[in-house]
Structures are given as structure tokens and as C-alpha cells.
Length: 385
Image (cartoon, rainbow, N blue to C red; front, side, top):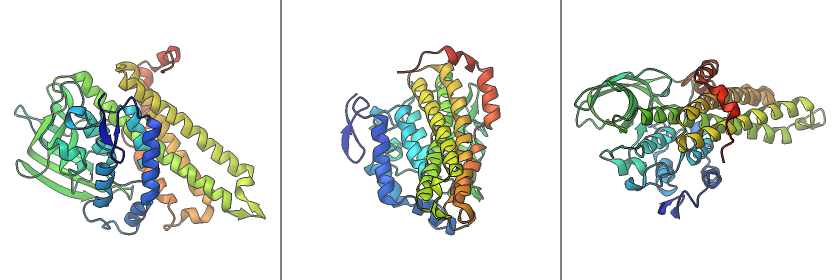
């Protein structure tokens, strides 16, 4: 693979860039830019960033200078064409600091451009550099399509709970078609077709959601006619959400451990008590297990293992949801009384954990689906390299 600019302008390629390097670069960026400040600003004032729900300047730096979205885009569009093993690492870091920008929607949209047979829509460059804001339904793979794709390539219908829906320039969603549920990129610039937007409340205070009513809006189908590619896109959507949840759980764990090292009670730091140690250890085990499943699923999708990949994605999302829920509960409990206050960050993690757990399938339902899909065969599967 030829090199492309990314991660702060470096010339990189998939052969030279590891998922851990992606993780480290984004961790350094978010640490230096105090990303949690955006989440806190939205906690204190839902209109802190207007209709956007995030700081556009910071997003442009993340998408343009760091090259977050371009990592996922195909080379022919000017991207790096990195696989999901790299992209899930990026989503983990964004989730760890509750970053409210359109990372997941933008990365998934860019990734779909590289599906076999996919054609580049107008404005692909603006999508990759973060100029065009991408919205998507919060629950992408977990419910039936809410819009219908016409024979002339237009979508109509109501899409509910769209992330950054009030300011999105592009909508990534599933549309009902003769081929089944197909991923489409719909233009929301208003130049062709009608779009009505209505802001809706969200449990997650960092999520700017809106319902969109579309009438004959032009759309580009990702990989037309390739049902296997469409299934991969649905799996990728669910997996990126799981990665974001693992990041959120890891963020909870980091805050728990940091607090346990400095808070004193009865003459010693609370981290010296077994009750606190065991709570942190249980969360650490849950996070590690969920992360391992996310990575295994990412590698399976990247390798084109259709059935095994789908099974692993279902299991990864179930584990990630439960790990984040457990971590958010523990974060509040370890902090004691202060963890229940509005001013503390704990409830921001708690709200996102509860909201995301319900998206794209409840853990018990996902495990049932995985068993039905034959996941027990994974027990005899050779470990991925």
C-alpha cells in the first residue's frame, strides 16, 4: 500500500502503522486537547456548541490534521484504507474521553467507500477531511430500515435519533430496497429533495440527536447489489459502537484507579481496601475480555470471514455493553457521594453506558443471535494471527 498523509501529517501505510500506534497517537491528541471539557460543557449547557453538539474547530483538527476519518477511507479517495483492527483502536480512544464529535458516523461512512464495488459519491473529499458532517441513526444495525430507496436512487421516510442530525451534511443509514437493507449515503444539503429536522432529547448528554424526515433525497448506495458487503457494513457499524463502549469502560476504570490512589478514608488510601481492589479488578477483567472480542471480530471482518466475523461481532457487542455498564456502575460507587453529583464526570459515563447498551441489540438478544448463527463453532477455530 502506498503511503498517505495521516496522524499529524506523517506518511503512513497499514504495513507500517499498527493499531497500537493509532491508539497512542489519538490518546496523546485527546490528552492534549482536554476532550472531556467538551462533554462537561454539554452537561452544563446543551446549547454550548449550538446545533452542532461539538466544537467544530477541534473536530477539524482531529479529522484534518490528525487524519482520523481519512484512516478509514480508500486510497482512491485519498484515504489510508486502514482495516477495522486500526479503526476500533481509534474509536476506543474517542470513547474513553466521551468525545462528542461525529467520529463513529464519519469513520463508518469513510469505511463503506472502500467496500468492493462502491462508487465515490460527490463530496467524498469533504467527508474524509471532516468538512462534511456525517450523521447516522444511533441504532444502525439493530432495527429495520426506516427509509425506502426508490429506483431512481432517492430515499424517503423518517430516520429517528440521528447523531448530529441538526447539522449533518450527509446521512449514513440503512434503506429498504429490493436487495434488502442497503447502506446509503444521503445528501442533506437541501439543494435536491426535502429534509425536515427536529431535535430530540437524549439520555446521553453528549449526544446531539434529531429526527430527520426525508422526501426524495438523493443517495448513493454502498456496493450496489453486493449483499455480503452490506452485511459487512452492518457488522462494522455494530463493532465500532462496541469499540467505543470498550473505550468508555476503560475511561471509567482509569478514573476509578486514579481516585483510589488519592482518596483517604480511616487513615489510608481507599485503594488499599480489598473491596475497592476487587471492584477495580472485576472491571479490568471485563474490559480486557470485551477488548479481545472486539479485536478478534475486527480481524475476522478484515480477513473476509463472513460467518465467523458476524458471530464475533454479536459477542463483542454483548460483552462491550456489559463491560461499560459494570464499569460505569463501579465508577459511581468507588467515588462515593461525590460520584452521584451533577458536577462530577461519573454520570456522564453512566448515561452513555446506559444509552449505548440499548443500541444495536440487548446483550442477551445478541448472544441468542450468536448461538443461532453457530458461534459455538468458534470454540474449535484456530486463533487469529
